[in-house]
Length: 332
Image 1 (cartoon, rainbow, N blue to C red):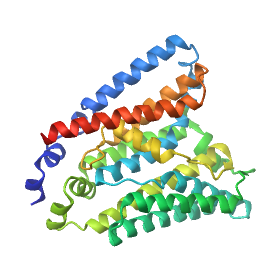
Image 2: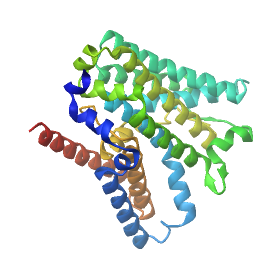
Image 3: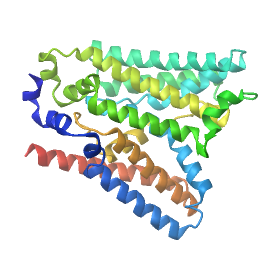
């Protein structure tokens, strides 16, 4: 039985309830840090706590949050997907290009999501079936998807005019004063966080990430699970691309640039282990929120935009170091 091969991971899943795990040590710490950073920024910049700034910050982090959900699943599997940012850009460009060619926007969006899913299928085949390293496979797909987006646009953003209100509502609409994009992210976070903790299908992801050889011996179809995970990351990245198109009405080949790195940073900050077998969707989204709050604060304080990337990846380095130290303590 796989349970006996990896009791630590299994005990975490079986003995926990939704409240206990969701508000575990890492998540609680992140909430406290976010509140502290927000308090400091409120003192330094009166504009920080305004409703308009809160709404814009929340909307801006939605795409990264959606991608971080998929990236967390991939990291729990013991892999990662470097192509999600490029797939996000490709989906935006495909939908925009088809719409400008006369295709109805919802059909164009479906075709764009399908194109993204095909990228995920290819990733899954090479990683799960052929057995290639996820780094090489998704790095190659990152270049292929981004290159295809540049081919579609010839390197120039496409301005999409006359988009139906029903579509633009995805990116600019609100319900009871709450931006619709934020509502979708909250729903997605709750659903996937629950599935990661309770669903038998997602438990297999934990099993494989914790001990792939034991998972194979227990009868789990590892290839099928890996295929499913890479399809999921591509699907969510494509949806993020469509929502970004609805928000800005611009299809740019640079959409989603470095989104994969921000997603990995957020997931690790949220407690997901780079070694696999451990992770939290809620923690990853909190990681996205922390990075968004810090970047927004830097903008309000008129700090150079170049420092934003520096700060983001300095935080990533710290989070990875903490994860490494934590894993060493566990192994000892």
